[in-house]
Structures are given as C-alpha cells and as structure tokens.
Image (tube, rainbow, N blue to C red; front, side):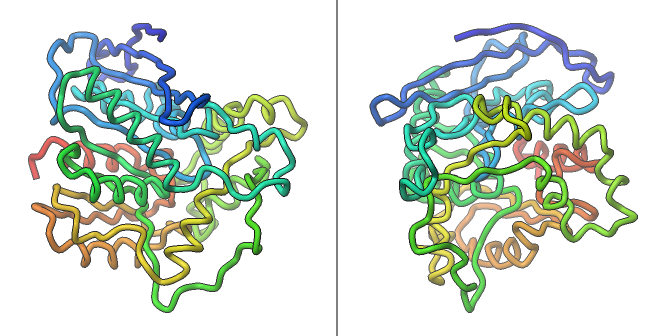
Length: 334
C-alpha cells in the first residue's frame, strides 16, 4: 500500500485536501493481484455505505486511467472525493496495474479469449469485499462504464444486499434481431490497440465542426497519454500499443448476439441511473432506452441523455454536467 496527500486544484471546491491510497489485493484465483486506488477527503473520519463508490471500467481501457486522469487539474475521482465520497477504482486483471495473465505474453492466436465477464465479476467481487471489510460497511454504490455496465448490472442482480445505488454510463444492451457475429470461431486471447486508431474511433459520429469544440486537442492527448502509458510492454514500443483481453467478446457472442441478456434488469431493486450522450457510437442511445423500460422493479430509476457527447463524456467539455448529475443521484437528492 502507498498513500499521499494533495490538493484538488479548483476554486469551486476550495482546494479541499484529498488523500490517495493504492493497494494490490489478492484475486480469488491464485497468482493474480488486483490494483485498487482510493481517494477521499483527508478530513473524513467516518465511513458510510451511502458515501462509498466503486468505479468499474470498460473492456478496452484500464479503470485507473478512465476515472483518474486529470483534465484542468482534476479527474472524476478527484471530483467525487472532493464532494465527500470515499471513491475506489479497480483495474480488472489483464488491464493497467493489475496482474496480466500469462497468455498476454504469448501470441494472441495461441489461446482463446481470456478474462471473460464471469472472471471480471469475480475480480469485482474481490474488490467489493476488500472495500466493505476495510471500511466496516455492508454496501456500496457502483459506477459502471460501457462493459462495466454489464458487469455491475449482473453483480447487482446476484448481490442486491451489497449494492446501495447503481450508475450505468454508456449502458450496453442488445437489439432484436441480434446483430451478426463479428468474431472469428476462435476469439484470440487478447487484442492489440494502436494509438493512432483511438481518436478517430472516439469521435465517430461527431460532426466535423464540433470535434475540437467538445474535445480540445490538449485534452485528448492527456487522456491518450495516460492510457497508452498503462501497458508496460506497449508503452516502450514504437508506435506504442496497449493490450486488452478479449473475454468481453465471449459475453457478446453467448448472450447479446444470441439475443438474450447477460442479466435480468427486473432483478435490480436498488435506485439506478442510466447516462449516455447523443453521439455515443459504442453504446447508441437505443440501448439505454431499451434497458430503461426493462427496469421494472427498481425503487427509483432515472435516465439522462446529454447532448454533444460520445462514449467518453467524462473527458469532454460537458464533463462537469455529467459529474454533477451523477453526484446528485448518488447523493439521493433526486
């Protein structure tokens, strides 16, 4: 474990001192360690389920880079911590600072897809138990992003007593009829993502005259620098690359592409918020709308669509609006 203090550099929050701690915790499988980062106000001395949040990544980029890359002096984790939350982020195995399975040192085609959704949920469960035991609380809130919405949705249906609230950012769902299967018969263990392909994919569907308006070039460079420095093997390559496990594709093949859900939304009883942006090409708006109608038993459900944003709105011009809306939901004020 390591820890340090620093100040969030924004006048809105009066430079409240935030503490950061880092942990490597054991997964449920031998030889695997999971990276967990924690941020909270240095003045906090009481821990409450209602003020505890665990953030879960998507299928391509590591959790710590997605939730804790600062732009203009603060990250999403900083924002949550400065507003009184005890916030954690997990790198699922195979990503970021967590253990990379041995298959990721071999040719991708030598093995079938690794780190599937069931494995990722075991890692999430290990992180949840770590946080609950550390703070002596019985529940926490989730923020899931992209693939993380499937993972946290499934976890919540299976462990309702451990989840306080649920936020799904860029929620994924399936359409009927199901799309054709885009994957080869044998899905490779992992994939290699080149940096030069990242920005065009990020801005898919965004009108040309809006691109720099919603995503200043300096911001995209900062975000991509953080992501492409997260792979110790790819960071030193020329050109740099990152490796990402392909296990998520097994979920898509076996569930979504087969026309059946990975979890049953009717089994989610906790308050839930669905958030997406109009130009999200990865999880188009119809997915959130379809899912929202299926949340028939939640004590409270909300749905927000932000204009002029993509699948990565926490890194774009409207980020503060996204943060504030999600915080308001977590606060339980609406």
